[in-house]
Amino acid sequence: MRLAVAPSSSARFVRQGVRSSRRTVVAVSNRLVLQPTGSGSTTHLDGEQVNPPGPVSLREGTLDVGRVDPCDIVLPIPTVSSRHAILTVEGDKVLVIDVNSTNGTMVNGAEIKAMDYVELPIGGEIVFGDEHLAKFVLQKVEDPPAAAA
Image (cartoon, rainbow, N blue to C red):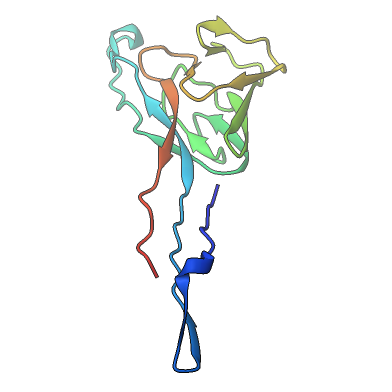
C-alpha cells in the first residue's frame, strides 16, 4: 500500500505575484514477510545438517514454495517437498494451497487439505512440512517514511 499526503490549502503561499506551494509526501510501503520461528533442530534428520531459512519477503502474485528451483521460494530442507505449496499474495491477504506435499502444510496448527485454499492472516503461523526448520509467522513490516520532498 502506498500512501501519499496531498498538499493542504494552507501549504500554498502567494508572494509578490509568484505562486508556490510546499508539498510533503509521505510514502508508506507495507511488505509481508514470513519470519522463521522454528527451533532449528535437525535431530530428526538422522544427522543431516541443514541451515535454517531466514526471513522471506513476499511479493504480490502467485508464489511456488518448495525445496528446489524453479520454485519462487526455495526452502532447501529435506522434509519440504520439491513443490510443496502455492501462496497467492494480494495486498495484505495471503492464500495458501498445499499441492499434495508429502509432509503437509499447517496453518495456525491445523493441517490443510491438499488443493484447498486457506487464508493465512497477518500474525498467523504456517509450517511447510517441518515444524523445526520450516515454521514461519506472517508479519507486516512497514518501511520507514520517505523524507519530505
